[in-house]
Image (cartoon, rainbow, N blue to C red; front, side, top):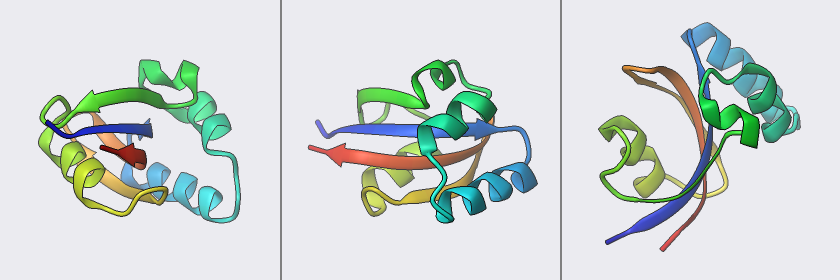
Length: 92
């Protein structure tokens, strides 16, 4: 079973997610932005979700974590929770 470690920033709107992504692209610190803006309890840990198995997260989230490039911020990815900016740290 595949495993991955990822972090994310969960936002209410697509516009908000795009604004935060722009800040990240300009070199802003992911962890600081997650702590300040993320609506997920993981915000306390800078958006760190730790290691998890494929199939644990909602499908749209899993698609990014297990298929897209590592160490790149992807999104906004829409789920029932809101809009995510997702960075996969590693996969095994």
